[in-house]
Length: 378
Image (tube, rainbow, N blue to C red; front, top):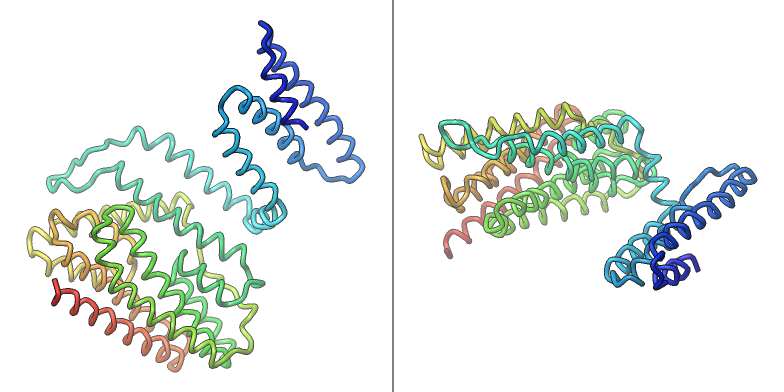
């Protein structure tokens, strides 16, 4: 009815139609606000969703009547979806603290203010470091990591290990592996189950690498999809089998070692890491060719795969052949995964480390075989 009223008022053909539309909007706002105030006093629920939805309906009705039908329909669909998921959305937002939400807002505001001021050109002798592009890449990876971080916080202990492992793979598979390894120390009987969760998380990390590459260098992402797909498939199947072997327990375990990737300090740290690896990659590619980049991939992969992936994606097709870039990213993923197995063994014990390490080795071999077959047929 509110939307219909907005449409009827908007179609008024008098000279004062704009003033009439504004007066009608204010009247609707006053009416809805009054009734919401009375209802809030009665139920002690101070939600303004109903008022905003009513005003939006009025405005969309006017938009549709004035000819902006596509905008009105699109906005109405989005608004309906938001209202339909009102309760889950409230629960999800409550799972995040104000400090975490504030960190997101601060970074977004700083990006909006700082990004236009950053020079969109390189300033180093190797023509590599573009401040604006580096910051955009840092925000891109931080945003993707935050999706996983938020999912872990929302899922919490109630969501169980599988969902926590999947969400952790988006946020940080290393943090997930370390968290699960610590849980093994206090729950030795869950060693097999938690190893399966760590493998699933690492498998998702490999797929995430392909998505990251696709945002910068689609041809590289297509080439990466084959070895990373094999890698993820082996780890996913291995993790599922280990979890099927030991079904009981661990349903309420949660990841506890993640940090908010949208904290300004984290974003600045990652931007610096990207800059360093991009510069080293360019220097090594020019000085030692692909061999130098391979060494950098193995070393940097121990600490972080994302920065190497983004840096190599920038080089691929220009300073580095696509085939060499695929191998470099694959080496970084292999280095990262095997180093996590070593850390898991050190924290969670020999058995836990062997389960993760054995499956990881098989995944590395599978990816290497796919790379060999692909290079032999090309």
